[in-house]
Image 1 (cartoon, rainbow, N blue to C red):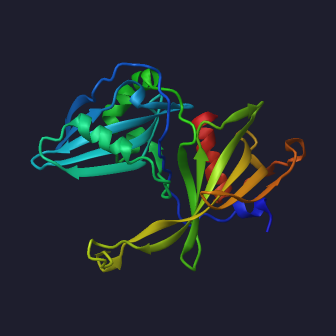
Image 2 (cartoon, helix red, strand yellow):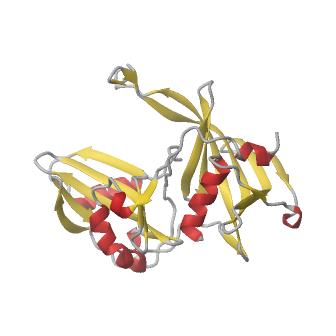
Image 3 (spheres, rainbow, N blue to C red):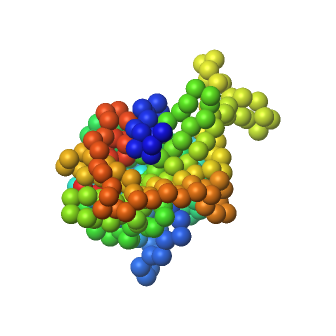
Length: 287
């Protein structure tokens, strides 16, 4: 099966996600999160300055919340359009039960846990149609958050699609931020394909967790992954591949294939495919 056909696997499960790590920020004095009031029983705060990061036409923003009446703190990372038109669901979400924790503490905790390779994708929606309780607050601040955000991080992953097989294995497809190159109307970017297995989510005693009689499943990463240099034309809705590097684990490449970029042919994306999900997300962020 060719690389082109592999990318055109029909999407069986989809969501979009992001992790951030190892980014060198511009020197700015740290400012703790700004409290934004209360909505639906949640006290909200938003990170400031280059704690947030500009991603093409959007910003990766960190939002903190405190549940009214209980010591439950949450930190979320999500994408927000700079013009306030759309928002993603949570990319990373971290919770803690701590008395007198504070928004700055939960912000630090959330950022420290944004280092695992994400597998579950996240949805985009119009901000006025979003179920995110933070959407109205962030819509009003979108322009300011983008203007003050730090630079785009390198080697941060944004999963934009996944495909699951009948045998319980699957693969997640993620944009590698900081690797975009423009060739006229064509955007070249590295895509990471991460393999996973679908397994039951278990409680601390090792028992599968069920909800309404159904076992809760989770995607568990394996050590195998690939990096694929892909090209996308947003206007023509075409794509191609010029290089693929396979890794059996994190210690080195096991196989590499490539063709000269000038020989690469851009093909139309197949509707409802992994390639189409990649193109839609890349063009939303950079088109």
